[in-house]
Amino acid sequence: MSDAFWQRLVPVLPRVAEHFGTPFHIYDVQGVRDTAEGVNQAFRGLDFREYFAVKAQPNPRILRILADHGFGFDCSSIAELVAARAAGAVGDDISFTSNNTSSEELVAALAADAIITVDDETVVDKLVAMRARPRSVCFRVHPGRSASVQNMHLGGAESSKFGIRIDRLHGVVAKARQLGANTYGLHVMLGSHLKTPDSFLRNLDLLLDTALRLRDETGVRIDFVNLGGGIGIPYRLEEQEFDLAGLAAGVRDRVTTFARDHAWHLRVLFESGRYVTGPHGVLVTRVLNRMTKWREIVGVDCGMNGLIRPGMYPDAYHHVSVLDGEGRELETVDVVGSMCENNDKLAIQRVLPRTVEGDLLLVHDTGAHALSQTYTYGGRLRPQELLLHPDGDVERIRRAETVEDYFATLRCDADRLTTAVVLR
Ligand SMILES: *Cc1c(COP(=O)(O)O)cnc(C)c1O
Image 1 (spheres, protein in one colour):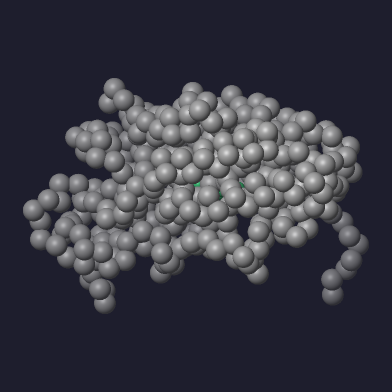
Image 2 (tube, rainbow, N blue to C red; image 1 turned 60 degrees about the horizontal axis):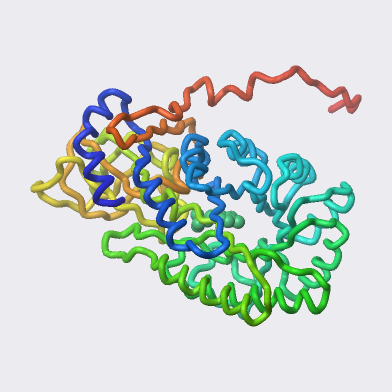
């Protein structure tokens, strides 16, 4: 969370909480715009486009802001295609990067005229069977054990479900030629929340080598490289901002050298999610109960139904602030929600100002992979989403779920199959 967002939010927060009720995620329009501009500025001079990863923040209101800055959208499901189209995206504004892809999804991506990122040979087989003519086909590569990355959320070579094995790429590309796409690309994404540019640049080197090999072996000329998402943000106060300028300089250097040496122009795509919106959201939740168990517990009105990262990834951290907590005595607490799961914790053994019932807590950096990742186990419903406009107005852009929503799927068409199997 930036100081500027803090300055904009904190003075109005009590009134916002009073008016809309808690809990809520609130997103800072100015911050999102500033970061979007910063990304475009960093890569200026290159043939570059950012395709925002919709799964990080699928609210079409936010997507529309990003579209204003020229961003395309990276979608991985039919619902995300719907969200991107609701934000006005068409054709090569959309890159469809799915995995374990169904024919139905491919039909939807083709209908949107999206760039199709092939995660497996079976996708090419399905496209061929459909006699599809995608505008653009991109191949997601998994380089295997040789590629060292800083984290392995997406699986090392032995365990990953993502991407085409690099030693099989040639065959998949050769087969895909019959699709007759106008342009071809190479994609790689191995990790998320990476802290430095080096693994992106190593991956780019790999893609450039691979492009040369593919030209020689298959005659397919690669038009663009997609370096995926994965740029990290400083969740902890002591962490540094990601060196975006360093990343852009490294990319520029490699792509210009490649152009000079091989007379070969390459377009560069990224699919960042977290970096673009992550720091520009805050989960605001109210203290319901102060409890003494074997440790001190602060029970708040939102848990994994609003933010699951700390419960799901052992190393995930979100900073927590107590509104008007300055000057209070400090204590070590767990901040918990109401779900019947002991991992339903927003913070574990955290030093916080001493809280009382009714206090407002700010859980920082919930602009990406927050609400979109939640679930509603035990009937714990998802909170609302608000937008903080640069003029200080606050607008509801998604309502909280209701008990009616929870039971909505019980209303379904009557359908009973008679199998004539008599159970005795
Ligand atoms: C999740 C994902 C992204 C976005 O990742 P961030 O870490 O949010 O930048 C981009 N591309 C693909 C294929 C993804 O699965």
